[in-house]
Length: 210
Image 1 (cartoon, rainbow, N blue to C red):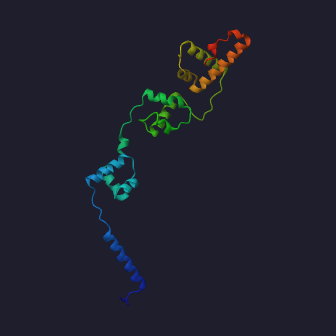
Image 2 (image 1 turned 90 degrees about the vertical axis):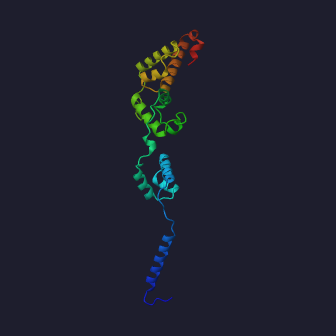
Image 3 (image 1 turned 45 degrees about the horizontal axis):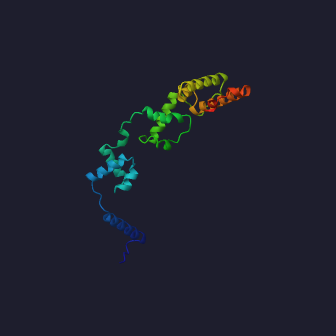
C-alpha cells in the first residue's frame, strides 16, 4: 500500500518501531519472587556466588537480583558471618615446620581439611610473626659460638633420648629445623673424622648413627 505523504526513511523507521513493540509484547512477563526463588537466591549467596553468577542460574537480571538482595538485607555473604574455629596446637604443628618456606596453601589444605586456603595463609602470617620469622632476609652465617652451642644441644639431645627436641633447638638457635639438623650432622661428622684420624679405636659403631 502506497503512502505518498511519507518518505521512505520515515516508513522504514516506523516499521522498525512496530517490530520492536511486537517483540516487547511477545516477551514473557517477569513475575515477582516466589518463596522458592528467594530460597534459591539465599542458597546461591551462601555458596559465594556473585550477582552475575546468580543471574545465570535464575531467570532474573543482575539489577533485579541486586535490588532483591538489598531489600532482603542479604548484602553480606552468610558464610562470612560464621565465626572461625580457633586454631588448635595440633593444626599449628602441621604448619610450623614449613614457616621458613614458600608454602603452597592449596596442598596444605589436604592436611587441614577444615580450613580454607585464605585461613591457612592468615594463620601462617600469624605464626611467622610469633616465631620472629621474616622471609627474604638472608640468614646470618654460623659463628663458632653458635656451632659450639648447637653441638652441645645436639649431644644433650642424644644423651636425654630426644630432649630437647629439634623444634626446641631450632627456636633457641633461631633457625629452621632442617637447618639445625643438617648443621648438627655436619658437625658430628667432622668431629668423628677428627677422632678417627687421631685414634681409630675410639670410633664406636653407634657414633655413625645420626
